[in-house]
Image 1 (cartoon, helix red, strand yellow):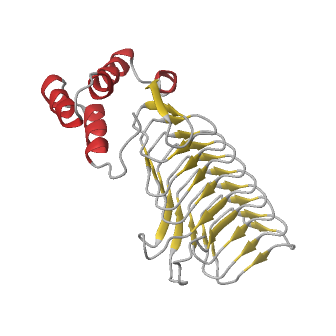
Image 2 (cartoon, rainbow, N blue to C red):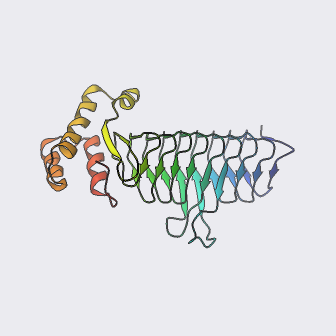
Image 3 (tube, rainbow, N blue to C red):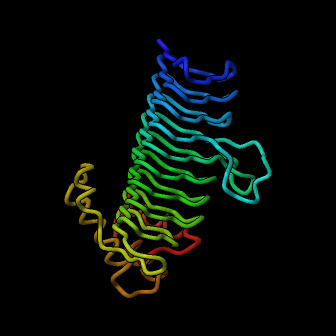
Length: 260
């Protein structure tokens, strides 16, 4: 049974699923979509351009689907798409897309976004991610599945955060962070600090699989070979399993360069 507080302002033109709970002082605009079993605890703003899936929880003072903080934005129709089973803690902001991107900001499933996180326009965030307090994405950022973005991290526009990677708190990321690695550091001096072994073990990676990932990066980052030579050696010497392909595809498609 859907429960809507008498102190909430919910448009009759919004699409509200089954068993949704909307607490006091929430605002849900015309055309907004909220999936089954989602909870808005109170003081949550959901714009007309938000499309929210099932089983999500939004804590107070969260704002979803507002206009981009981008001077090029000309009020074009754009959206925020959010999947299922996400938790958004207090004071989080998620902006919708722009014509310079794909007219959408998208967030996957099973994410945990801690207080004061910000996801800017045209970002693409994968599944099973964790954003610690104050983690901030500028526009057009891509975050891979199972990535962890530490407290008060700032990620520059158009950067990519690789799958299963870990970014340490207070880092400033101006280039791509490689999959499976730990990355920490301030602007233009961030560095990698080895494979995210603890995180991978927690996710069920075997020791053999972790060792193979270490072999990839021993060639890519520690061999002192030029990038094209390192890629060639990896392709010749290692079996092309999903982890090797993940790293090679990520590196080959990097436009901003990646942190070494």
